[in-house]
Image (tube, rainbow, N blue to C red; front, side, top):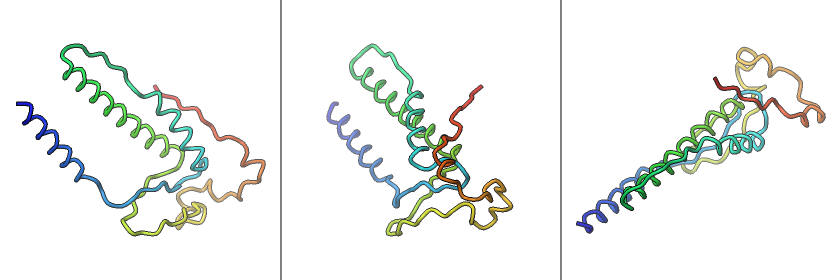
Length: 142
């Protein structure tokens, strides 16, 4: 019986490993907001608070399965939080196919249609003093 369990676990692991997508992803700024490093740091700090605790008792296999399921769920919650947080900061994840050369992020102020879609971006570039000021960081949830 245990042999069948190990074989099925091995086959499912190999099957899920084949689901790996090709290409890479990178963050692209599509709206005004803080720079990439600041946004990533703030979203990573916020993502630490979305983990859920769990309690399980019973057979060791059941407890291990419950812990594994909780760990996977926590990682999914953290990834979703990070994705939404980065979107709120004006960053979007874009996929690049294999072999593509990394491109520089386009300046959103000069993007086609920027005057129509984001009028606030037509301002002059920030002075050094303005660059040192932190953007608003409050998130309000109801």
